[in-house]
Length: 468
Image (cartoon, rainbow, N blue to C red; front, side, top):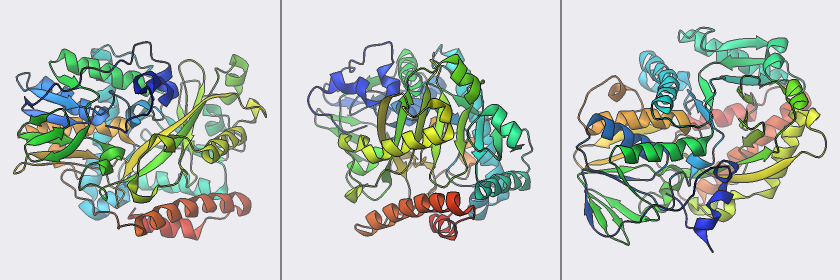
């Protein structure tokens, strides 16, 4: 689900991200919904969440009539624009999960996420989806004293819940630099539970796999309302006993959902393909995804064609949870990303060879908690609130929804995020003030820590405000 583009939308899909621009396939939309229709399950949104749900429903019960409705094309939203990390990351920490649901539930959730990375890799192979999959893991660097302290705290937390070095290892300066040769590395952490992917190839390949299983996808079909038993569009109504909302950052566009999630923008840049001698100094030889332990999240990967794809938060939240194509480009943030990339890797030189810049909204709930759920009485189901960690967790969501909808009680349906209800965001202008103030606090904290090499108390206070 997304916002319609102006002018010639079909011709502009490739301009939405580096990933979409490099697809070796036409991006011609599938046929729109021709009129009223009936189904067993109707899914709103053809991103990862909607398509994984359709995939696992169709695999489990081929007789089910499943229809997916998408405002634009499959992969238009975050699924075609993200950083390409299929990870075991989750927006709520182990400690936060344990506080809400108990330590056993926290451990079960983390183990399910570890298994999800392997499961996505299995499906990619089984379905022949060529998405540049690389099991390189993630190296998270520490480049200041406070960042190194947070690296150690992350490892201590993992150990407290029984996860050993095979799941999260503390790296000294040499070990970290051997994986990622950034400037000023003091140490870091490494987890094997992440694969680098070409996200648009993954979502487009998944759409084709779903269609081979008999699922119908209608693109260029905006859903104007969801209610029990129906998804309503201008072209007609799809009637179904089960309606799945899989709209993530675009959820506020639906009636009654304005305060369900805050659409916060994340932006990215990609360099031109770098020469072998540059990669010899940067590293990432196994195509590790990389980040560091600052407050305002950054993320990157070495693409299969030898580029650095690099992104970060910091774009403003827009009043009233508005989503617009015009917000995909924030020159100030692109400049900051280029500057940060140059600081990390001075070998790139003063004229950073950036060829692509793009962005898009992700979904943030008020308690920073992703969830998946199904209300059998109304037939309404949902999943989302991934806060940017949805490439992997959307697969877990899809498998879980398939079990819930089919009435199966499994290990997945007892995980702590199932049927969790996040509180609604504050009304405006409080929502605008809170989200943007938080972004400024975190950015200011990173700057202060770099200058003083001391941790920020304001950042810790805001983290407690988020419930983590």
